Amino acid sequence: MTKTILYCATVDYHFKAFHLPEMQWFKQQGWDVHVAAAGDMELPFTDKKFTIDIHRSPFHVRNIKGYKQLRTIIDHHDYDFIHAHTPLGGVLARLTARSARKKGTKVIYTAHGFHFCKGVPFRNWLLYYPIEKGLSHYTDSLLTINKEDYNLALRRGFKAKEVHRVSGVGVDTSRFKPLPKHIKATEKKSLGFDADDFLLFNASEFNRNKNQQFLLSVVALLKRDIPNIRLILAGEGTMLEDCKAHAHHLGIADRVTFLGFRKDIEDLLPVCDVAVASSFREGLPVNIMEAMAAGLPVVATTNRGHNELVRNHREGYLLGPHEPELFAEKVKHLWAHKNLREHLGQQGRRTIEEAYSIDTVMLEKQLIYQRLMGTAQPTSYQSVIGR
Image (cartoon, rainbow, N blue to C red):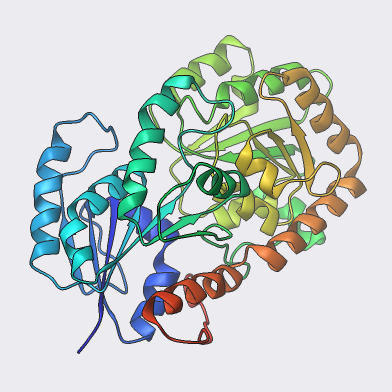
């Protein structure tokens, strides 16, 4: 009898962006793969896709309907595994799968960064911590993606049957890779920049947590010292128009390029000189891992996700989230020392290859999946995503 896994998240794009490799792996093992999420995107490696009413806000009334829809889906299918992602996906899946667990279904939840962590407002702890700890009772395997969350789950006595730390979702190092030095200037021109422009890059949703206003302030501090500095911001979100207005207010609108949503990040990153990130909170940020794989040094604010990936003077620099002047100093130092940029970028590439590639992460997950299946060693895995 064919085994079946159900993936659940808030939006279907989450799976296209982060989880196709593991969905592919289950197909390779002969499993049927089902997906439940909001959205109408077609997904590869998917046998059935259910569109449910689910909203990222925990207080949205739509989640009541989503709960009923997901409960009906689970009750009508004999799932072997249910793997939940995103906070609301994790809440609804674990609540609706309680009866299925009693019949043998294994429920897995990947926490892509707890909303309660060091430095967040206390209200986050009041709201999200009791929910996550309570739902851990209905979790067979809790997967965390950084040391802080892993240690917190153990220290606070989360009741999942097992708790693991995996190295995020993995980066395809065949897609994200450095450009040969002799063609970088030519590629800059092809994107509309001058060959000697000093390009800072950030790709992330425009919201308060990502804090792109901080990066705009850094460029404003550096515009006289580095006349050829350019900040490239890719992404969309609720704060996009505010950031554009802020760039005009700071007098740097001509130094900032807002790209909007892009599907060619692997082509843009290697052309740039430094990756910058200003988030207050991260789990294990894919945008930083992709930049490191592309050979860029990183200057970022301190948080649990950035701290996991970047070591001072190894892959780049970490600064406090309220220190734009120190952040600017590090950027200026990298501008002035091209050989240092190359050295830090090479070290970042090695770090990703050794610990955060798709193949490495899939081997970690295979061990977990196969232990839940009751089988032995992981099978070999070859990613074909993006090739």
